[in-house]
Length: 564
Image (cartoon, rainbow, N blue to C red; front, top):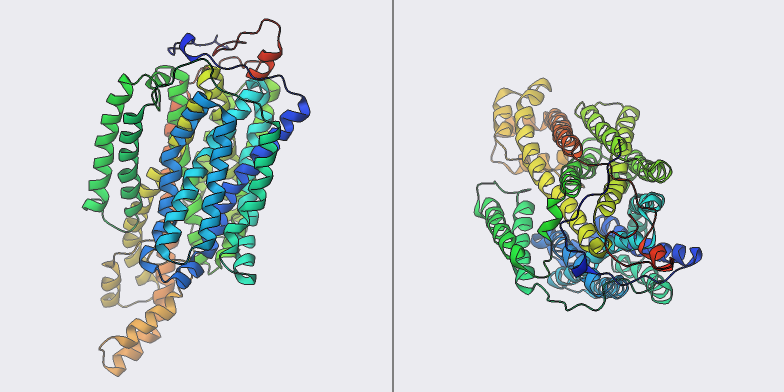
């Protein structure tokens, strides 16, 4: 049975929202189109840059700083998410979105001009600052323009944009890098971004608060940044270092301690970056918790399945991107379809539970992954996982936005986005460590099964393999032969060992496939936790009004719960 709206702990009078001018249907669609273009910027950037990174590292001679090209973007885009959401509540969506896209475009142009590795890393950080605005503000704008009952039709398109970017990104990145240069992959953002800026500047109305004194939470912002930075860097380092080292465990613990301090600061702040009152509402807390854990399985699939295609099956980086089509198609269909179902029925709880069940089933199927798994069987498994992941990307946002006052829509949406990204980062770090452990566990068995003598099995069993050491573009057979030929061995023994290289490679690849399959047990467990958390979500009737429609209604009052 549907329950009534919750009693919000947030003081509505203190959070009065500025009215949104009435907009025509065409104007609203133009705004959505411009926002989707903005999202395409961030999504394309991630898929295009990955393909070009090997060429970039070679040209800029920065192999030792390779991971920082990705890490700095992740760091700045994640840290700034709550700030952009909060600022858009305080000063309006339009100026903040225009500022975010502009910063992203400036960062893109500078990246294209980079001549040194440190310059590229710095400019990627600037890009990330702008990128942090795209997703939370875009989702909040849709929340302003459309009622929760309508939003499902549009929220699903956002996930579809990321799927589309993943489809064309690898090919476009490879084409631009090969035909022109890697610099061109950053310039391709500029025309798309300028079109988005022009439409937003022309059509989008001012949305935000008015008549309020804003006390920016400077202390909270500083502590939050100080907490997230070491936490994310520590998680990134976990991909290649032990958790008990200072650069991993030490940084993570420092981040956790500073998060505790951040909670104390936010509890006393007049305008907190992340309002703790949000988490007193059961539906909001349950939605954020479910989103955090639901992201585990998807992030693991996006990272470890390409590793399987590139290393175990020997596909190129571009080809492995296309092998991900079944997963991405499932995400797109699931996201758009779930949005349509919510828009037509107004019901979402059963849909969320069913989607998480599919995530668990898809992850469970992928635990059976082996080097000899039939490719069409694997594609079917990926499709099942994608169909489960898709609704979680669209519906959780609708649930959250329907459960909070309109006046804090930006802050609430950015909190959801932040915890989704942090959940993926945490899950990926833990899964990466587990992958290394399982690889070492499977190696002795698979090498012995491949006919490798026990003496060599023991040597490989003690190796500290991780997914970065056996990466894309590495011909393991060539690497092993070079290592053996350089070793101080008698000629006869060297010839015997060289003859075993195909067996060693086969054993390592079998072990890798088994270890990648084992990683998906985390997807099963996290989906189960997200399912339990979702049981606490209350199915609140979807509002039939938005900030825009309330403004057009006679005597409408702009506020948090108006129109419920």
